[in-house]
Length: 166
Image (cartoon, rainbow, N blue to C red; front, side, top):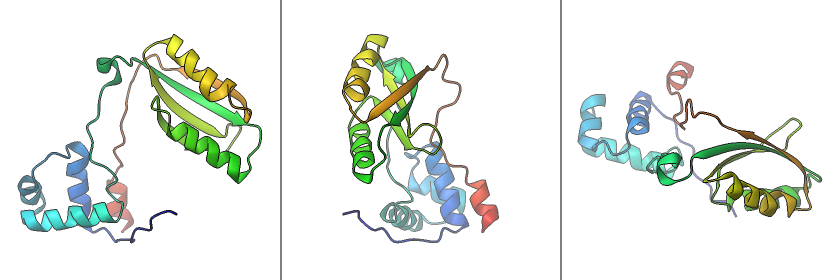
């Protein structure tokens, strides 16, 4: 059963804190407080509230895949045979459990899923396709796009639009 999280309204202080944390989540709360005109304890309370509400989903290091031996980024469109809820949930679970799959999106259009995958070699990708796609009776077809260059990568959410929408 999914855990329900409370909805919270974000004010301009919260958005300013988020903007700083998206750049560097190791920024000391004292420094954040000085930047947004709040005390460090007030910043701490706001961050905790946003974590509890699921606004802040994780605090993690962003690692360059190439620097740790995973230089190949691949985008894959996956089309399934049957879109029953049970089979879609099974595909979501399998893709989510695969370490090479960095991102997985269930999408509309011709493809059913878009995956972002990182691997060390094309041989590793071939082995992965055998496990994830050829070994899955519900995968109708898949298309592979190999990235030639990582031009922009990130998960930063633009917050300026959030401010103007309020």
